[in-house]
Length: 182
Image 1 (tube, rainbow, N blue to C red):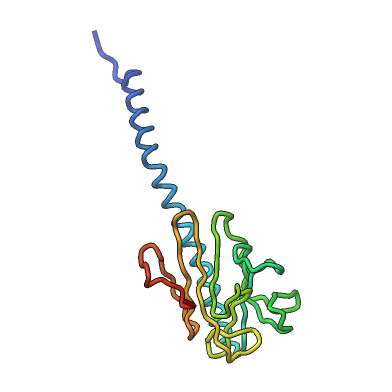
Image 2 (tube, rainbow, N blue to C red):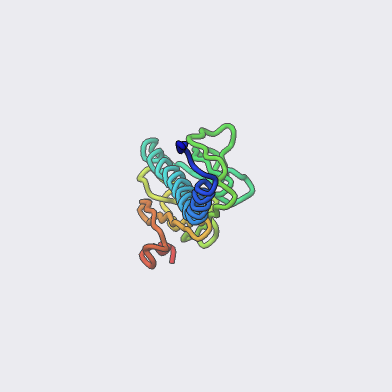
């Protein structure tokens, strides 16, 4: 009697049980890794827009602003725009040059802010020297922190008095990642 090559039903069931156990163990780790990557991408997008605002202000020799897209909101989650604010209303209007626009972030990513002005910034502005400033005066420095959170993961974007930007992980860096507005 010749034996046929193949697998038996019991062998197939054992492989399926082992595969489901491995998948059950790996799925939460994969989910956390995916969350970290999404947060890193959102942080990189926001940092790139801040860097663009600064570089455009220096290149154009005048004030350039970045503000949330939602006109009545201070929430950066709604997306943001980099623009030249000719009329001083701190909003990107249709007749003003729009340099960059970013759509809304995922619903599970929150953005909070603390700036030296004490109230939530509805804008970030840079002057021709590449320093952060207030909308009313190019000489008044304005600095602080934008914090992004998704689940247990967090990132801080810290803008210093000179307008330089750095990103840090408060979970990994602890007190070295505190807000400059403190």
